[in-house]
Image (cartoon, rainbow, N blue to C red; front, side, top):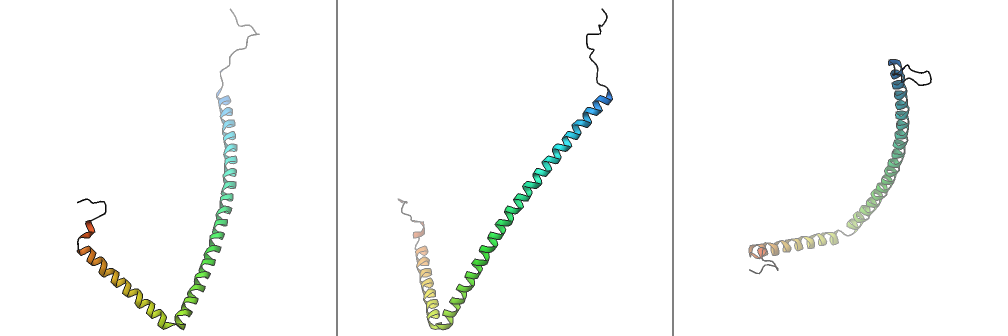
Amino acid sequence: MADTPSEPKSRLPTQSDVGDGLEKQVAQLKREIAKINKSLAARAGEAADQVNGWYDTASDRTSKAAQSLRSQAHSVSEVVKDNPGTVSSAMLLGGLIGFALGVVFAQWEASGSRYKHWYDIR
């Protein structure tokens, strides 16, 4: 039977139809990429602001810590200048204690007790 005018004919897309469809899809993808780029730029700006805040905070804290160390070092140097005998006596005492500890540990290691532990039953 012959085709009747009431039945729609299925039409195959032509090359220009396919090209137009592809151009529309490419344009839509370009718009989406532009939106993504704007979003990434905004997030990068926010991240940069946050990092700048962290840097400023760290810089302030470092400056305060350096100032505190400077004042403490100054006060220690003043004490050393005012009391040189006390400081030298303290250094001598520290050296003697270190020497005594070295002798004790050397004897302990030489006696072989280094390998005896409270959990060793041998």
